[in-house]
Every structure is written in structure tokens, then in C-alpha cells.
Image (cartoon, rainbow, N blue to C red; front, side, top):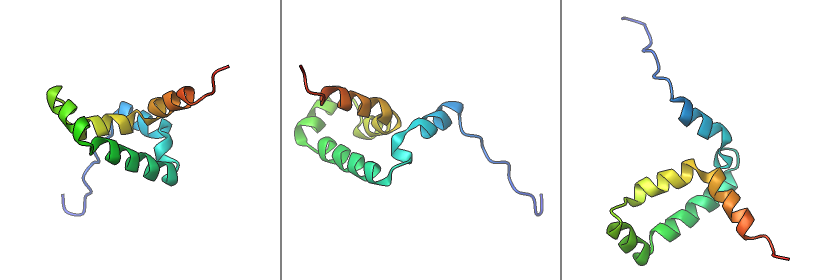
Length: 84
């Protein structure tokens, strides 16, 4: 064992796939804006109360919204399009 490196634990395919397809990993400005928005929203008292009532953890919701950022941002793009 002397001088040997431990074998790294491989990431799950899902984690790796999400990282490759997540726009937050490629754009530091977008990452900062997204994280700031999440902190602002999840820090609001009414959101905290709602999460408590639903027995949801803010940190778990934050992790989900970060890992699924591509889907969240695609919904934002659709909702901000002008209607004809």
C-alpha cells in the first residue's frame, strides 16, 4: 500500500450527465445569478413556512434546482416569450 494511490470512487452516470448538460457549469456569470436568485427566494419567510408545511428541506430543494437548472431555465425562457 506504500506509495499506492487509492482508487477514486467513480461518479454516478446521472451526476456526470447532469454536470455535462448543466448550463451553470459552463457559465460562471449565470451560475452567480442563479445562485443569488435561489438564495433570495429560498430565504423568504413565506417560502420557508411553505417548505416547513410541506416537510421539504430548503437545501434539498436547492440541490434539485441546481442539478435540474437546464430544465428550470428552459421553463423561464418559455414563460418570458411575448404572446401573440
